[in-house]
Every structure is written in C-alpha cells, then in structure tokens.
Image (cartoon, rainbow, N blue to C red; front, side, top):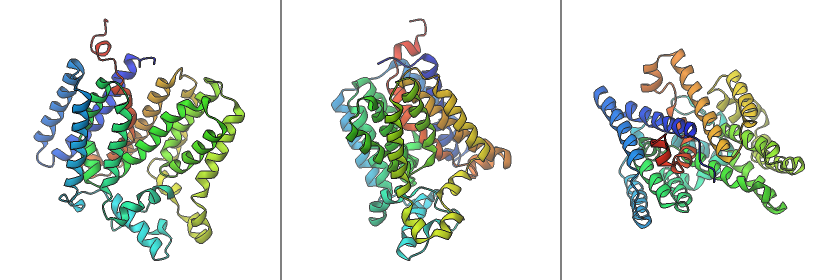
Amino acid sequence: MKSYSKFQNYLSLLMFITINILFYFKYLSKISIACGAITSVLYILFIIFLFKYKPTFGRKLVNVGIITFIIATSSLLFFIPKEIFTADRWIIIDLFWDSVSNGLYPYAEKTSIGNYPGAMPFYFLLCYPFYCIREIGFITVISIALLAFHFKRKSVQSYSLFFILSISSLCIYWEIFSRSTILINAVLFTLFLLYLERFRTFSTRQLIWSAVIGGLLFSIRNVFVLPLIVWGLYQLFQEKTSPKKIFLWGFVFLLSFAITFVPFIWLYPDEFWEINPFSTQSSLVSFHFIVLFVLIAIAGSFFCRNYNDVRFFSVLLLFGIVTIHFIEAVCQYSFTQALFQSKADISYYIFCIPYLLQILADTDYKRLMNPQT
C-alpha cells in the first residue's frame, strides 16, 4: 500500500493531538487551570516520544492489554454514575424509547435541558438492546473491540500504536463513562467505508447488500454524507467504476435509508414534517457552511489519487465542519463558554477518531521523524 504523505501524517497527528488536548484541558481544568495546562503539555510530549521511539509490543501482549482495558472499563461502568457528566445522549435514548412506548412522536419530545432527539432512526434501533439493559456505555466498549479486531489484522507495530493511542486518549474514556454514542457511530461508518474500498470487485449480491447496510448506517448521523461524497466521486472518476453500478448502489442505498423513516411518516405525518432529525442536526452548523462543505467535498474528491487521499480528505472534512461548529459557538458566546460551559459540543470531534487512528497506525515512523530519510 502506498504510504501516507508527510503532510498527511503531520496534519493527522495535529488533529489527533488537538482533539485530546481539548478534552484534557476542559475536564482537568475542573481541578485547576494549571492541572489542565500541565497535563496537556505532558500529553504532547508523550505523543512526540511515542512517534520518536516507536515502542512495539508483542501481539499477545497487546491482546492482553486490550482485553484488560475492555474488562476494566466495562466493570467501571457499574461504579461511575452517568449523571455526573453533562452529556445527555443516554437521556435522549431513554426519552426516545419511552416516548415510543407511550405512543408519542419521539422527535418532538425534549430533555430537561431542552434538547430534541437528533439522531436518525437506525441509531435508536442500534441502541435499543442497551436501553433495555439500562447501560448504554457498553456500546462504546463494543466499538473499541471492533476497532481492535480491525487493527489486529495489521502489523504488530500498527496494532501496538492503536493500543497506545487509544488508552492514552481522554476522549475515549469520556465517551465510555459519559455514555455518549459518538464513537460507535463513527466506527461503524468508517469500517463500512474501508470495506467499500473493494467496491470494484463486488458481485451484484455484494453491491446490493452493501447498499442496504450503508443506507441503514447512514440512518445514524447525516454528517457522514461528506466522506460518502468523496468515496462516490473517487469511485466514479478515479477508479473508473461504471456509472450504472454507482447509480444502482446509490438507489438501493437511498431506498434503504428512506425506509427507516416510513414508520414516523405513516404514524405522525404532521409532526414529522414539523420537526425531524434533519432539522435538528442541521441546526448545529449554519446552513451556508453545510452547503460549503458539501461543495468542498465534491471539488476535493477530484484531487484524491488513492484511497489514502480519500481517507485523509474525509477526516479533514469531518474535523473542519466540527471546528466550524466550535468557532460559531465562540463567536456567539466566548471561548470560555464554548469550551467550559459546553456551548459547543467538542464530543463531535470523536467522529474523526477512527479515521485518524487508521492513518496514524499506518504511519512510517522513521520517515515521519527523520524527514531527510
């Protein structure tokens, strides 16, 4: 496989560090600003050390480490109350299914802090088993296990790096213990897009089933339209995939996606057109910025020469649109309110984590840390 360019490596590393610094500084500053600042600096030094000395563990040792991590975090879910965090995704999941049980239109219900359910229908169906057992945190632990299985098939160096980057990332712990669900959304769609890199070899059956699965996964968060645009246009113009094949896949994909809304349109026609997940999700970023990023995704896809470019440009788009969300909050309120009072939701940066791990785990350490080589 062609290596990522130095620019892609460095910028991906910068994005990964930035995401974690936001989490370290925001949450450890609750102890003191000095604690948040010092920990952030130490984290940066740790990452530099990691890429300079490239520690690699045996595959069995990494397996033990990941299993221990999964068991430990799963056990801690029984002792760390979800109420101590400000994230309300678990509340929204409870609200959604409680509303369905009571015959109410779930997308019109609000939490105590005024948030409407904003995720697509398949997201709530995915979370339903965890709603039943009253512990949504397990779904994030499963997402870590899925990533581990993906990286286990790579080189031992990549597998080791995935493990170290994951257990040192505060955003991962926050995601688990706050009972957020961003990571499982990101992991499923990222792994799906990696699978689609074999699209040219798909049989008709594979094409149809992948489109059905893709439509269901897209019925989680519509932000993934950006990497999907990049992938589709790359297939069409760089891979020279038959337009007929792309059209068939897209038709089945959209049909699968649309079917997930049929129960709501059928049962609550008036309410659905008044408030729905499209209107709720689009309110997070100004409409003109959404249009701008769609246009950038279309234009940028023509500069992708291989799948490494597709992955890098996809995560750049995701990082960019979340940053716009953060900047808009800073402009409307202030940096302090945007970060520390959660006027901006920095957890959306977790959408980028699977792609960034994919890029950074495939990094050529020697070439990255020694540009002259």
